[in-house]
Structures are given as C-alpha cells and as structure tokens.
Length: 245
Image (cartoon, rainbow, N blue to C red):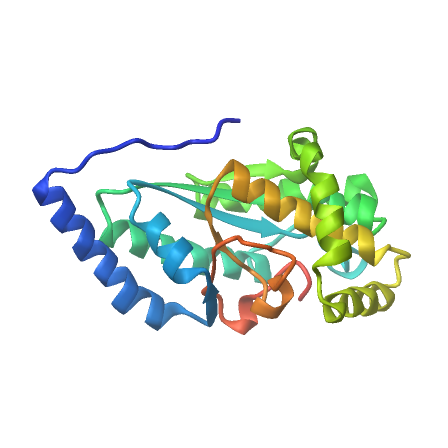
C-alpha cells in the first residue's frame, strides 16, 4: 500500500473550473444530501475536496446477528441498499466534478468482530467475502482493505491511542461503550474497543488523509474518530447495515 499524494498545477481555466465544482458541492450537494452535521467541514472536507485526487474512506463492521441472518449478503438485504445509495452519490460526484480523480477505501473491521467481540474468524471472513462481491458490483473502482492486514503499520500508533482513550475521551463515551458491550453480551472489553477505534482513526488520517463517509450516526463517531474530517450522508434507515436486518 502507498499513501497517494498527488502534486498538481492548474492553469487559469482549470482554477475557474475547480471553483465552480466546489461551489456546487458546497451549495448544492452537501446541503441537500447531509443527514447529520459534518465534522471539520471548513478545514478538512472542503480543502480535500478541492484537491485533484480526493480520497474517501468508509469503515464497515461485521454482522453480529449472523446466527439469524446468516453470513451471506443477498440483494434484499440492507447492506445492498446502502451500497446502492452510496454508489448513486458517487456517480453524482464524478459527473459534477469530472476533472477530479477519486480513491474510495472500504475498511472491513474484521478484528472488531474476532478479537474485540469474540466472533469466529470463519464467520467474519465469510461475511466480508460476501460484502466484497457486492462492492465489485456497485462500486467497482473502490478498494477493499482488512483492518487486520494493516495492524503492523498501525502498531506505532497504539500507545498514542491508549493514552488518548485514558486522558481525553469524555466519561460519557466510556459509559456508552460499556453499555454497548454489556448489551451485546459477548464478553468484550469496552476499553479495547475504544483503543481500536482511536488507533484506526489516527492511522487512517496519517496514512490516507481522506474524507470519511460514515455509515454510522454522528454521535457514534464523536471523539473516537479524533480529527478525521467526516460527512454524514446516509438516511437513518440505511445506517450501520451490518447491525440491522
């Protein structure tokens, strides 16, 4: 893997086109598509959207109700509806900003299922294998990464993440994570989950400098996503599709 940073120059006409595109995004696309308030919109989302090469990032969790829903994703499932909606947004972005190139990274949160929440490796692998097939159909140009395969690169950030969780996360975040762990009933350690989330956020920001297109409601990302610029574009019915039948 390689952190892509595109160096570029614009002529006068190109600069003018860039401003037209950003005006459309800022005045039309974002106000009409937002379902939650963005994070770091002015100093993160907009500057990165102005770049010739813009990186998008979407993490995706495993299915925790696989005993009733199975591990394979079918066309009628919420996951497919969510991917179809994201693909529609992406088509509009590319049509209205044709001078840009894009990189969309989908991150499979496999270790959240196996190490944090005690799902079997086989269950998690089979689910994400099914997700990858649907990604190829709806967003064929996207990239698919497993968090477990990035752990070596992320290792130097774990001590920083642990310190952040210990000293900077509000008590309400710790409390909510503990309640969620108890509700799931899988014997998971909420502190491990929080450290995993913060490590992921630090790594993705340092490695890719993307705009996160979140599948979760905004309050689920607060604090644990640290400084990642984020957009919330999914209607509630399509959010966290790995958790809802």
